[in-house]
Image (cartoon, rainbow, N blue to C red; front, side, top):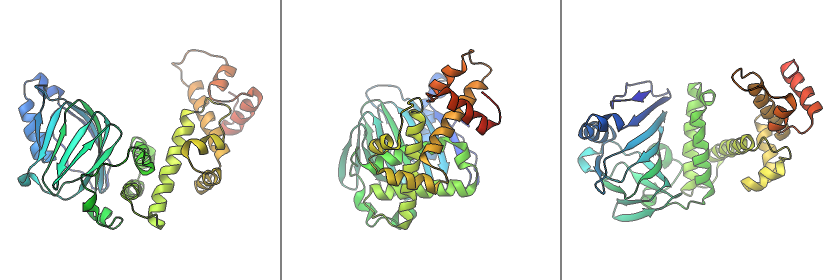
Length: 319
């Protein structure tokens, strides 16, 4: 859904809601004040003040799952103020500054957040968030009740920056990419599982000890991170489980366990991913004609005979 005006239709809480918010149409029509009032105060429940004499610019994608939501995009320099009269919930937000810097003032604390760092904010108390420069932010909205069951004294973590190199933060931002995978969110059960995993990863970031529930979220995020790395490196014919283990800073044995739990092996997953890429290229009628061996090498196969055999076994036809 693309929003030219800030209107969102109510949907089932178990559904996936996706929409884009952009201030551009309002700027073009001279109605930025209306955008700030309706989108800012009435819907998001905060006051927006542009900074440095620059016109307001917001362009973000929002995705909502049961008890979890994520917004990512660009913001011009601005001050965001959540006044007491605008508070209508006590959920928790984790704000990641992908590019730029920010400053949070809340609960008597002042936190400076640099590129790559994150900070926890509390929707239930007044706060001021200042972005003095153009920023790219990723904001995760978590249920306080679900986090409270996983993390003790969560309020003490508000306005305290998280280390950009924290493994749980890297997994959290990486696993959030699953929100772009429609097949992974096809049912209410899958959407609930992804929401639970995001809460588990947030709990690990906030210092919770790994128990049976948190371990499940960690396994899901680790597996997603490994698959993403494999997809990025498919062209590397020498890609091995050892390479991925070193990159992900985990053991080869753990990688094999994760793929076994997913009903496959590292080797089979890599082969199937390469075959799937080759199949997409071969069936793309808009792609320029290329010889089979060039496509095979582009997909990470350095043995044309093996590629032909594997392709025929997988698709019951020759390339």
